[in-house]
Image 1 (cartoon, rainbow, N blue to C red):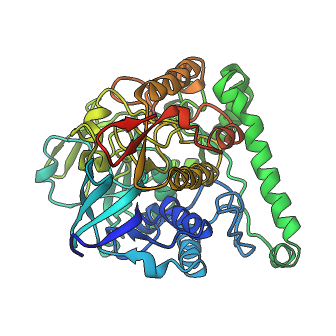
Image 2: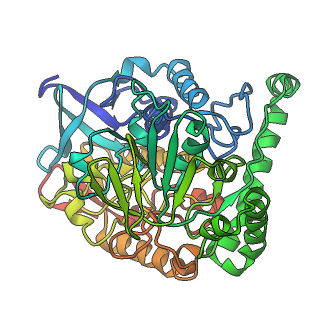
Length: 495
């Protein structure tokens, strides 16, 4: 690449968000685009997370694009390998290979006000683009805690999202740090291999039964021959989750019945009252992500598995010391400590119209208009942006809504004629996010009594959408030009 390379749209990332954006561009008749991917293959989080037991906690027929249905899902909740294969299939089916630039990491983006385009420096050269769609996703950069003494640990250390398959765990003493969604899948998958497994639990998660089963060949054949049955299945899964939103966002007390189901699930699996006490959450269900598993609790009852009800505080050689003073010996440390969600590293690499980075603009908390566009960053859109996350349904629904917004954004740009750019008015961004934060005040994520990864350093929930997916689709159906300033090639801006 060199300075002469120019595209109408540059898409960063090739997970669900990036591939979805690429498909939508093609469906809108736009073929002058490129997909910049730092890795050597598509798939995003489903390419990177290959840990034992990795699977989705959203039903397969809902966790897929509406425009690319898959009648061949093998299970209610598909594994990582099936989801990655699906994304490879989408890439081939919609002719996206020729648009991919693999092994191309975006190092810096800069808005050129004179030319009204983005200058994109990558690990393989420079290109320019009229518009940038950032689809790096919030679950792309692992977060490792700063633990004193970790550098001196003589064994193997890795994050769940960077699993070292070349290092066998058989017969080893393994420490699992964290009890989130990854750990709940990893621990049951590895406990039979290891000699000793110590789980460091900072906060006990709420865990519900996982209604997983194999989808029969008859069902798959029916979905393939009668697409209406597949559509009805998806609609039913969607509708059930839409009905749950009111309890999460408006009436958290209604979740007590769900808590009783979770506690019964715990009681049936764990007979030891002391262990059961340590595994009982002390906050309202839904405040953190609800986990689904039938094997988590049974794995923790095994004699060679120990649950330490405290975070990892320090490492001294091969000895791990918890905050409560508990010590454990380990040969391998696996961190299941999540990702950089509220401080996404890509934001540090994007310099907008004011000469400041997106990270600097978001130092007091992420904020975007309709979860998509940021003030002072013209012709720039984030897929899975601030306050677009979900705690109970499929993120693919949110992505597709944002793709509607992207399509209308580009249509509005074309209708303006000539070289132009759209940048959201700061007052529009503030008003939209003020309304969001006001709604957050009575949600379970604010009132539930927990400290979750949904919250930023200031205690604000800049991650989750406090409404239904249907509502989000309505507010992202079209771009309201009254919320934007139009920039032209000449120095002054027109309204």
